[in-house]
Length: 287
Image (cartoon, rainbow, N blue to C red; front, side, top):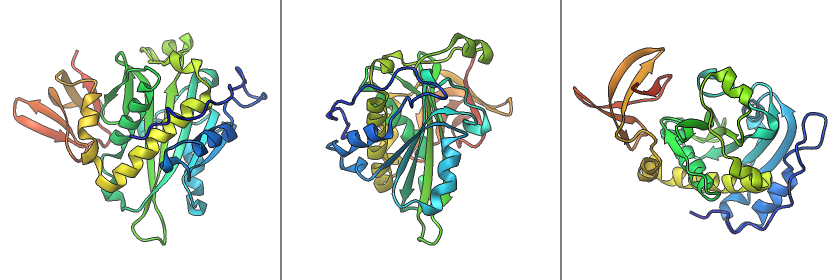
């Protein structure tokens, strides 16, 4: 994969700016890094950065009819950030990165099965550049030491009037540090990557964007089948006893076996192997 480890160095981000101060992330610095990269897949991505918005995913979904090129939108603070199933994503500006990438596929929606898992591969591989060893929890969580480090939310819309094309808006929230009050509020451990705070935020975002672009181009050509082995190499629960819940009700129990070419979760159960589609189901380790 054509990672952006060869990117030219960025100027340091301005320190600890909050609301009413200068931006924590500067779009022009990310754009300069992408333009100077040897990765051709990133050179057509436009970049925006704002201090505050409701949701970068909502912003981009509303603008899809007018977009001509992929667009990365970064926000220091999201007041209505969401995770899977509409759950709120709680972050503090100085301790997280929150951003979305709008990307157009020349494929219909049904051809995008497994896309959240491929995005997880891109994010895990990008984090490896910084020495962060992440794991993937099906279908769309990134873990570190068993705690949630990042979340992925993908929303889609048909590209009206242009054949079977589909726009995907890929939202990512990544924890750099964990405020103690956040763990107290959530009543669970939260993963973080403090190593990333030693780098300019623009460099981190440029490398993640490069990894995403490479994966998205390959996904369009080959589908999720091209990523099965890469996903398995990051599988957080491989060989462990797990259960699948539907609104709190256990629907499957067994041993985590991985994923298939469609991105379905495979479990070995007493009744044989089952393949589980995501939907609103939840995956948990058995206690």
